[in-house]
Image (cartoon, rainbow, N blue to C red):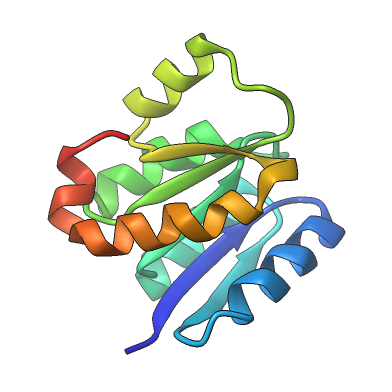
Length: 132
């Protein structure tokens, strides 16, 4: 079974790097990429991916805004938020309120594999009920 992942990041290099990392895993594929939160929302509604990865700082709609909107239409889909700088506690709280399951530092994308695997083990229902 293949896990379908949507990536939203306005930086083309980051998008390409994340795509490469994700597709290096045998059972994962990037089903779509978006350059802003609004397009991520539209792609999520259209494709219903298994996991969504959002950059926190994007034009048009940022990652938290996109997470809030996606959560309204796809409440069981786990969302991971990527943040460039060390994440302040206030952002962790805002991310949790927006429906984000995990915030990951962008330079530490290796951590992303573990986060995705953990969310997949939890399943969609558990992923919406437990915050890690």
